Image (cartoon, rainbow, N blue to C red; front, side, top):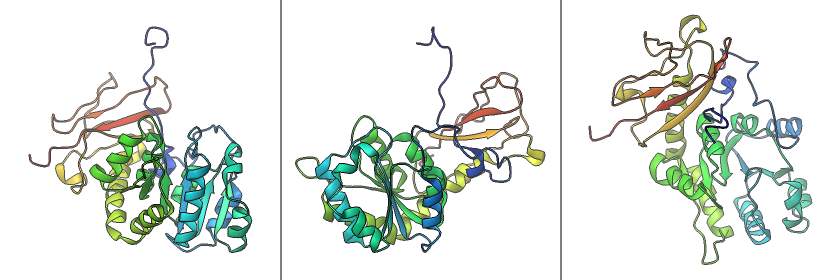
Length: 296
């Protein structure tokens, strides 16, 4: 593939407005969407809810829950009694329990949409929990927005990603499943309540959010990006091999050093790689932060 298309994939490139709000407010979306988002109704509905009270549920653009898991999730949400936004693609609407949409909407509990702007929803102050399939893009967005996750992995790398959330980063939990691989309503309700009511999850994901945003903060005059390389600058509660943080900035540097090659490194214990896409006015940049061994 490299011989046919010599490019480096570094996505997702999270729009800088969500990481460094004062830098580029026009960079507020990815610029494309697989489906038409129902943005206005989501924001208007969220504006009526209390801070950190809403559960957001989305399983991405490809994953399918199936009728049994959809029904269990629906009853788990009812059991929680918390308001929720649920992205149910048109192809899966038939899996919803009969009258579920009308019943929960009448009670003011739900907003069920076919698609939404996930970043807008995760960034809203009313949202307090993200039930996710643990796709890598979704997890990066959740961490960047400081959003705890209830992981319901379905396939490919999602089980590994869910393990990172629950066992390594400490930013959420992974639901347990029965012998048939189905997460039952009681388990889903338990996990949602735990993530939303135990302050430790919010504290941990908040540390990661702050670390990510610090990495994307521009230097004086908006001419670059500075990434802290001291051990005290990264969260001590959790450790991982690599954390990918994405932003859009103009020129960039590490500390006071800059090299024309587009590749920058700090010390062996904390490496930061910058990959340039070749444009002249603005560049999509990948921060690759290798965190330190906590025993060192």
